[in-house]
Length: 511
Image (cartoon, rainbow, N blue to C red; front, side):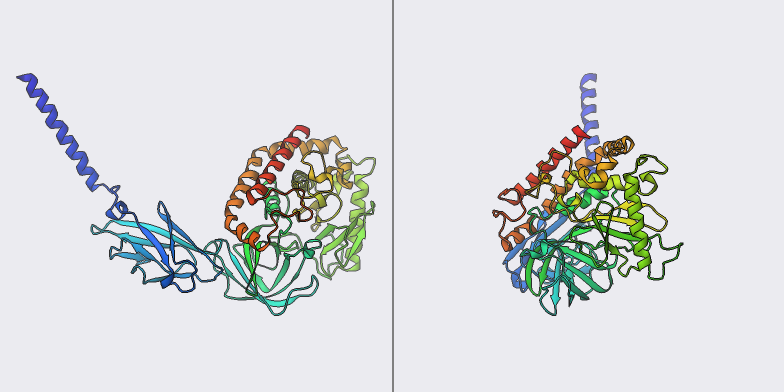
């Protein structure tokens, strides 16, 4: 009898415990409301949103977020959404919503809050983008842009596609062409100059900006890859960038890369800015921004001891005294590099150059094996007030990472930048060579991020590249100076990653 009593006692105790657990679940704050138990659906109906090309656009729901991309080039950011279930208690910022009726501005993501009959809520963050989902530049000009020298007036408005703060409705500017060989290509690069400083897509305010076309770089991102590496490696004054769609005077131009103009300015080459009165001994030492450029694309230039030309990028209105100063400083620096005591840490080249700055710039350019950066062009130097000569920013690397046929720069093996006038001599100093090796070893943990960034950018540009290559049907064409035809965008990305992987392996084995 006692045995049966104990058995029933245990059964009753178990039932009580289960009842208590069930009761706790019913009253727990973790219990999901009815709105969560029913799948929430959103779609955009063209009948209620004039101008749409698709009849019905469903939103993709993932967790607590819903997204949709509206086809067609448009600056429209206000939409009517249909949603279900329409519980009769759906709000946005406390304002009641009606399915298929209420209009909302999707310049930023909008949160819809569903409340069930028991007062429990479910919040869904809804994002709606236009065209390819990346920012769209609507650029209008007073006349066709046909020159690299002459500006044309215009204005810019931007559909940020919800990724950045809203841009002014229309910003006045001047625009001209830019580039050398790139200006001769069908898809044109541009330089824009706002009438007043503008912060564009979250970047620091400035007047001067660049729109790179990347016509001969079918990945659309070699400059972006180099800039990412520059930031990871600590290369001085590496520019920032944003991918954008460009619509000029109502005509789609393709996928572009917005970046910062190489200039002395706060947030760019952030050094002292000389004026025409800064000719005395206390002020004349900086700042200067130079470019080694065989093409002599500047108003002022001089030749170094090697005969290589240095052009003056800043100051624009350099005085004769300032030009003499920076010329003499460069000549003294080159002379110190090639002096018998060049490796002397006090009186050799280290007296004139910022060694760490040279090394960081070198490693970016050598890794990318930039064709132009071996004593040809886009090799920037700067000198701040009372400072030594530094290198940076890295610039113009569309002909890098296996994208130039005709020179050894196309081969992922072999040194390239190291063969240049200054670096060939610097590497004769065992101490310099050891510092480069030490820096390269310290950067090893950052190298995987290069490939992760490439994949992230490729995913981000997926719709953009499709539209770009519909407009510029060159994927299977041998566009100068491309060394291979991958046949697809993913093929181009794979080639870039494979080339860089081989390059990293070779540098690791030979550093």
